[in-house]
Length: 314
Image (tube, rainbow, N blue to C red):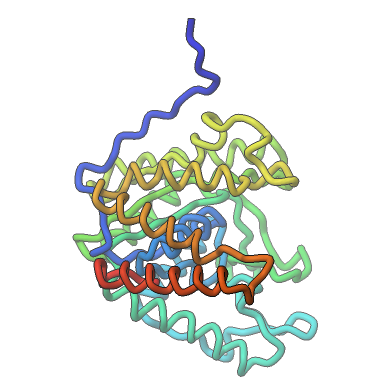
């Protein structure tokens, strides 16, 4: 009798696993943020969603092309909605109350990404939805509507062929030694409707499968399947029943580490996780001699890690 209580997702590890000698860039939906934060926590050099969270493949490809070109945002690209200045390529986290401060923040984020991209050799792209909003005035897909009137936009689904053609051209612009991880976000876009969300995710799955087939340096990581199938229980979701819980994110991160990282690298990440737990410890008696001694021990452990692994980004 089979006593297992879940259906396991088979994940074949990369034939050439990755380590700390690579720098990482993550772009896309909130799953890219989740993995990016885990990479940062583990001491990897990581640039995470410099445009903010991006949901559809077209907006992600436009963001990556801007990073490749190094093209800064111009003042005439901004628009004001209410008291806030915005840009269609950025999430509202980069919006501000003056065009000057908005430009400064957006271009600082772009320039940081451009500088790191020169050394980036691992790219994680997470597609969230195939549904897009096109600005009727320009005809271009926007990353965020920024609460403009709905009649300003045309809503439609990207096709598999559109996504594949876009990324086939894009990947040919990247360094030949760049490793690319494609994922489909397990977060359901419930406001689209259950059936529409299923259609959207299916389009994304077909597109990433075709791209992984066409390019030897492109790999698919089944984050979607891990949450939807292997962790098929609402206890692995937040209260909104849509986003994964911290426990689920940790489970997916551990699966990703086994998929992408070398064994030696995973041993180091375990050491760093133990240090992070020390670092995050909060005493109910912060001024006690015991807590001060623990802080000294934590600082000493940090120096030991940096001495043993000088490549760590802590």
